[in-house]
Image (cartoon, rainbow, N blue to C red; front, side, top):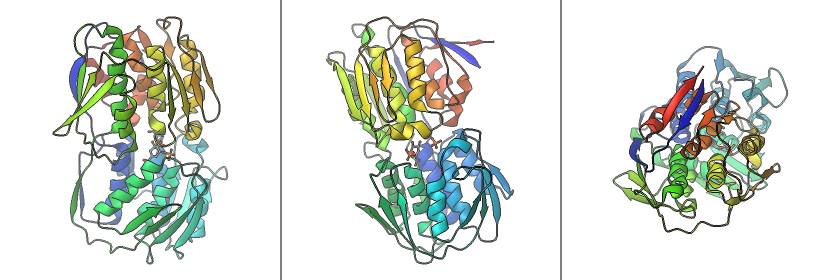
Length: 417
Ligand SMILES: O=C(O)C1=C[C@@H](OP(=O)(O)O)[C@@H](O)[C@H](O)C1
Ligand SMILES: C=C(OP(=O)(O)O)C(=O)O
């Protein structure tokens, strides 16, 4: 579906309800399958969350997880400990290009039986479930934190628990802390200090807990971007978008958005789980926004596009994980921002955008590369020019209601056949 979107209104106000964090949902669903007695509220309605749920309920031999990277990694650990069960775990063409060797090696060193079906180091996997015999493992921590969270999630089910030693610079640290905090909420004794994670064994089936998932902060990023981009109308009506349900003390690293976007003139106000984003029309924008995003890789696209829209430069670092996500996000950003008239350079871990001196090109078609975040990150530019988003349905990976929610903010949308 090719979608042409635009918002010519000179003011932006609205209230939007976003469903639960995809990351928290994926963790809690897996923990729920391992430890009976967990109830979850405000689950994510994302495709990835649904796929995770379906996979955990299925007794089929072949499980296809499509584009859901977190689910792929977590389920590899889960099926590795399903004694006596054989599972072929596969995914989309892109999933078969996303590396999983570090996790497979770690699980094998604990006693897991996992074979590659096609290329060494990549899905699909043939997993023969068994009891893991060891309780100590060492793995590289600089490629994806999902490998580490996957091990942490099964750690408490092992008879002696699990000690994980991390090698190298740890990437996406808040996601490891999120896993740790959720284990704590289930009264599992676990620690993460320096390069070492320790998980104590826990009794299976003894829990009785209800956990409410906070709404998804990565999805909130697109509203931060919209409010920031209203700088062009700063002399007109107040800009204010309320999103729910959020809290100040989040488990999600992407909550750093509140701090980052103050630089771009967006203030955040929490009240009774509602988060109101307001434009601070007097804020003087920086010439260059400089950020290390190694702790919050999923908001890199939003921030790059916000800066492009505002016409300011940005220097983003810590982007080494972007190349192995739904697409090579660095190359995708470069291609699409260039198409719109931007001057952008990328390396394999950084992005440098120059101050924009020419107007944004109108009626460009943004390619989305099977990546939900490409579609959603570029959509706010519809505040400036009509913009076409290719394969707009791709947003369902994390935020199926995105286009409907944008409509409520006055975005006109036309499907082009
Ligand atoms: O654990 C998680 O829920 C996630 C971890 C991050 O991946 P990396 O650790 O590979 O950066 C993030 O990009 C992904 O969307 C979700
Ligand atoms: C990278 C992402 O997801 P995953 O790795 O779970 O596919 C994402 O949602 O931006």
